[in-house]
Length: 490
Image (tube, rainbow, N blue to C red; front, side, top):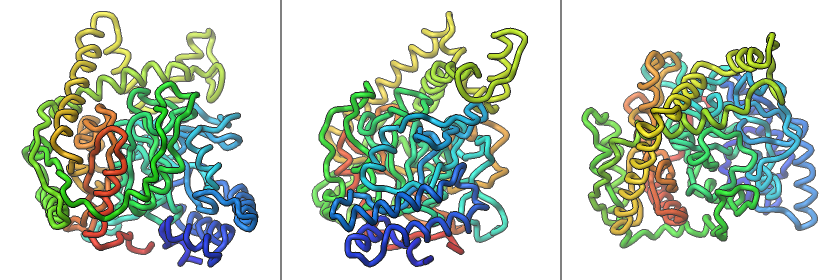
């Protein structure tokens, strides 16, 4: 059974097509792995009975010749996606007991493609965090450990930490994530897997619990570039229920993995080499550049001059949108309610009890920057700087086809490290936030190990709606790396 959990999503798909295994066998093997790895706290809600019923239906479809693109493949769904009939929490007490009567478009698309959900995955509360420590259900744990201190528990990154941990620990073949400022890419780097934030508008936001509406974007997390390409093809598509969804045909992302990148120009931004950048991160970046040169691509140094303003810009724009989006959680209509002597008191008590410290911090920041007298000084100015950041990328893509950077400034840190100062935690997204502000596709893939044996990731950034080139270049880099990262004991 355990051999089935070590297949990639593409390998498992091919075995199902050839009749070498069944969806039920594959699902049972992954359910057993979920049970064996519960100590990682990757799942908030497990749905094994529902998964086995879906697997039996999948095997029936395959016998009838009507199987979909992901039929019979066990996945996990980040608990930010509303799932009809299955508890959805956003990892927050404020949504205690909420069972949606409808399905998010992305999870619905995966169901239509035949994917089998094993349950809902852990995350930072309302996707606010870079460590998965802000979850009301406790932190997910990274399956990787340091060579120098194997007993120390490490974070899987955030906010899609449960998704990354579940994929890395072989509990699922793939998982959905959401990325607002790096929440797919940073945990992918920390856990030694691949994850892509597609272009804003490529995947529908309908049915995803909102954090920052102009930034949130769903994407796949899996072990390989090919797996992510297969999964994104099933997730993406125009949705009239989402006003930000773009009406474009979904390409065959898997077909883009030709292995030929000769003549492509790869931008290397000098602004992504800040003072104090870790030598290990710099070395793995140089290694990635060398792989691309050997494959016939041309590295080109570029300027993204407004990069240094990206982090403060993001932490004005995102909290402002969060304060507006989270106003709907008042204890009146759904979720947790704390009684009060008046309606206002009930609101205040319900929100105080339901929201964790990081969510409250961001609501307060967002409300402040939107308040009278401060809107123009902070929020309006941040939106202008955001346009300048996007313009930097537009100019860069006049001369290059893709951009290569580190994904995160460090490998995974300890569960009890980097927690005293919230700004230190926010710095984990310093390399991913500019891409999000510009709405561009960004993919993280594993590129090496630190001296302590932890995964290090590199990020590829593409033109709007040019995920195909990003996948093509990532596939070449993955082949050049020549290894399949696997945590010890998995």
